[in-house]
Amino acid sequence: MRVSVVIDNYNYEQFIAQAIESALAQTHDDVEVIVIDDGSRDGSMEVVRRYADRVRIHEKPNGGQASAYNLGVTLVSGELVMYLDADDWLYPGAVAALVAAWRPGVSKLQFRMDMVDDQGRPTGRRLPTDLHDRDALERVSRFGSYGSPPGSGNAYHVDYLRQVLPMDEGPWRIGADSVPILLAPAYGDIVSLAEPQGAYRVHRSADDRSLIFNNSPTGLRSEYERMQSAKVMVEAGLDRAGVARQHPLLLAPWEVRTLVLCLRFGGDALAQQIGRDHPRLWPLLLDSIRQWPSLSLARKAVLGTWVLGVAFLPMSMAFEVARLHRKRAGALVRRRPAAPAVTAGHHALIDTPSVTRRT
Image (cartoon, rainbow, N blue to C red; front, top):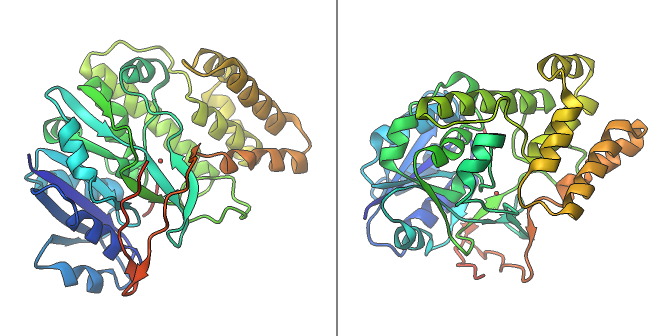
């Protein structure tokens, strides 16, 4: 089985070599590597051209992540397709493990990713905390989301991708991985691998003052707008696929947290917009926490207490409570993965035993 790894790059001169080398170092014997540069203005292309004899290179004007996803699916020749963010990397056995796990009827395979900091040092946590597969469609039809890794931790069957791509590029300059991730359960089975197969780089310092966990350079308003766009996209996608869904969709726990952060810290204009969009906001928040499957009573109590604290404590106290969700992102790794060694200006690849970003 041929597997295509599409590396989407924008201004990641310092990371792109490691992503490319990780794709080229796969133990599986039929891997196609495609690099799409989305109009980088740094020295990325000087790095990428060093691999011109081993990868296919496509330069394009900057159009955002959705444009790279749309282009990528037209270029691939593989039966399975991965979109690898240029600041992440794969472990050498990743593709082989995906191929071994694939079976007919699967639209998406997924695996956890070890979180590393901006320098590639392990943080001791993995994304996501929970992976959902057999019950993914039920969750999407009720909540519009399910436990999935970030974009680099997924592999899609090309026939599925061609049913949902091209996507509308306007709303998805960043976070475009949401589209194939969230719609996959409506088009086939989801299969989860037991072990992490790659590393997810978190650029934000653990002690910065940001309330946002992911690598998006934008603020809370953009996070809210992207969450709303995802709900609209999922509703339309489920309707097209003929999948019955809840009206309106509830919220996943991470969406509950995002909505409360936006409500309290996004400014008056955003709070008013949230009120217009969600006239029954508090019933929505509480029902979403109560109905999320497999969340223990203790975890529901913790999330509910966090929500109330962020919403109603004095601002300085609420801010400190709000930041707790970043510290607890991902699942704790009992044994920290080995940090990649540094050689020749980039990180060497380490196979480590046993998650929305850019433009």
